Image (cartoon, rainbow, N blue to C red; front, side, top):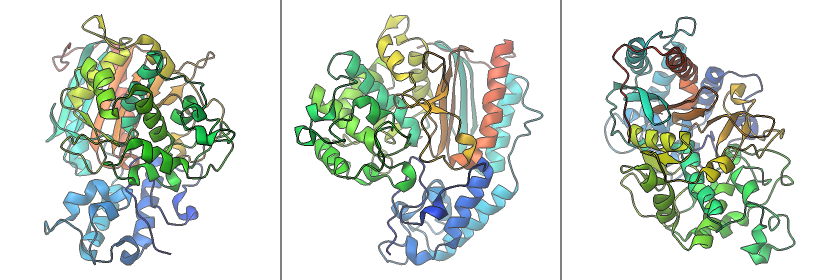
Length: 448
């Protein structure tokens, strides 16, 4: 069987590898999952990865665990990777994992200055280009720190951290009365009337509870040409089979959110890029951000089929502006610029109690539920989600904790499972410092 390799931006390992080689065992830690990812790639013959049979690996042929390492692995700067370069990069990554985390969870940073130093320690230990960490409350930035070469304007792809901002545009369309959360898909696609797909609702599509496959079984939405018509893209995706009855399991990272985006485009008559710009980017002031494709739109091409679950390119400052807008109930500078009702719609558990079709690389990801294009880390009795996040495959993690009245952004381009133990330390330390009200000169208070 020829191996088909999609980038799997949202979290897949390898499309075409046996399921038993991809699915991490239950009870596996993030680090164990990262080790196993590398072992799976190491065990595959180079020829299976080399889809176009030219003796080299292009970026789109790489499994997800190696995509962030692509520039470093290309030692001869030829634009692709030889078998020797692949082996050398796997050796480097395995040695890095063997060192373990950079930070000691039993001795976390106790103040902002220590947190700032920890970022440089983190970058050096993991051999990264850089990292950013921001902690805020409302429209105030309490801490804004950078390690390595990263700065306020560093722009990278967000992978699955794109889902939350992308879903926000669709939620605003619902609140504006252009879409109905509970209308049947057949009202837009009448050819599906009387079928399980025709009975799907926007809520099911955006919460990955439609009965489709998960990211571990492929990312066909990402594999589609971003230059094609988005309605045609939806038709191709809807031709794929459902694998479970709707609302019986959470299949994270599947293709259904792209169908939801196409439905919003049809309802508004706007291309998705224009819709997102109008409802999210411009109100939040995200001037250095664009929605496109995770591997094909670094420079902001106006693509007709941008990928809603993985296509956001942005900077730390811009993503923080989105988080401040969400944290303040849709306000910027005291003015209502995004509907508060859309935030309530987003921060609701639509997958309550459903089993996960895919647990993630390291089942320490488990125990969460899913809202409208974001994770519900905590669910209240009324099914509202007071703690929400939208982590991406490259390691970026935005979150809001409404119980603590804090938001945060961990911004990096690597592989999430390799960094998760340190992310936990940095996030919890930043929140603890903020809750203690400590100030020692590092916090940068900034409004819009």
